[in-house]
Length: 410
Image (cartoon, rainbow, N blue to C red):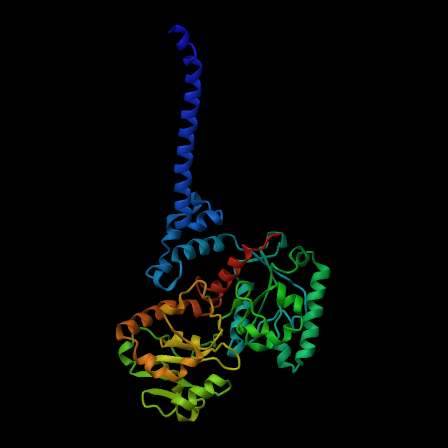
């Protein structure tokens, strides 16, 4: 029997080793499961490398965003990512170029180029600007075609001017060639800048375009480019607020018939007694601010695309508290990867124009009240200020750019 017991001491260490390995494996599995759970619920804390120990609790519970969670796709992600952007984001602005043609701000920040002008002015006076290119996450190419257009420059000559300018930046600085322009961006509103730059394919394809006309037929790429809200500031009247009781008109639209959908809208509904559809702009001789005042008295403001998919009427509706009805196919709505547009607007296909009144009448009053309340919450995101204010249109555009810089590798 003693001979049979001799092997036992040599087996015991082996068993101990096996038990240790099993214990270690179990602990590893528990730890992996925990981290997987956390990453699923709070992905940006890990994927973006945030140092949670340096993120104060007040950032997560930002007072500026209290009760706003219902207008965002991911409010927690937005809070965390926005806070990191404010701390770290830096943009280098190329200083070269004729100031009368390129890097300039219109004297009056009004009209259809207002968003472009405000951005040019805001970026200069913002915390995001750096004069040290080595610290920059993105590079701003300050092309503005606004003054070129005012001087009567043809689109062909605009294209030549833009191409020569960008070529000079590429030859003078080393930054474009590191990514072939993927960490560069330019900003242009309305279709003038779009048409002036589409003849420079390497600029359009490689760099980030921040444009008011996000049309797919001119090569807009949603995951790369940014839809700039077209805001006609200053607004003639104050923002709409808690005024639901005054909104007795079902729907309203007045404007030029410069697109197929607008022609159909006017033809089908201009004689309707519940929808206030005008076949042209309201004549100013009728009275002061008649057009703007109609936004205060209407539940739903119809926003059909014009010569492009976009319309400044959308931001007018948001400002005046009239729930916008998006009636435009293939429109990459501004900030739509951040804001849940279905929480504060009605999004329809162009073919729905024939059933427009019945669709709007079928929306329950309770749902309209919710849409209106959310619309008031989102107003701050579609307002330009100088100097810029947290969460305004400028900061939302910068946030979109901040999101895109994460996918650039060099």
